[in-house]
Image (tube, rainbow, N blue to C red; front, side):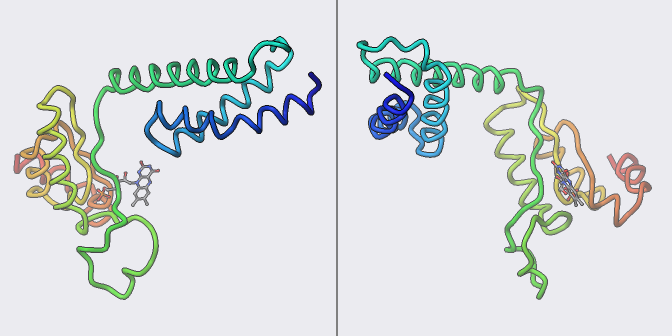
Length: 177
Ligand SMILES: Cc1cc2nc3c(=O)[nH]c(=O)nc-3n(C[C@H](O)[C@H](O)[C@H](O)COP(=O)(O)O)c2cc1C
């Protein structure tokens, strides 16, 4: 089988590969990544494919192996996580009223204090203290820091608050705790 025939056969098998990938991952975007990886692997190893054997079965085997390798790796990564940082900036504009709210991008600071604290509480509810949570998002003063810790954060991180309040904010928080 020459390269052109091999390539045409690969292309012809994309729809059944995609259907198989969707059945494994349950997600179309992850399935498409998996099919792409499979095609790249098959192409790179085309010399080792024995003509006369079933190309479809060979491709399905590559895809399945690829899925389990990535799946196992992801599982390990989650199991090995040292902690959860919650949250980052928000793209929501629910808490701001300003002509500038139309600007694109993530908002930090007071606009996300309550939202972030709610998410920390939810994560804590699900993880039950088994993994440290770093509470981040709109800590502008001691009350916000306390709220994060009360919601289940083991540590806190401050970014915008430091810009507005300066490093004295850390001292004020520590005194208030
Ligand atoms: C100017 C700026 C740059 C940031 N850069 C990053 C970054 O590179 N990586 C990241 O994970 N978060 C980044 N963040 C998000 C902050 O780490 C933090 O999650 C977010 O600002 C919410 O916390 P805060 O309200 O205390 O600022 C950035 C925030 C700002 C304001």
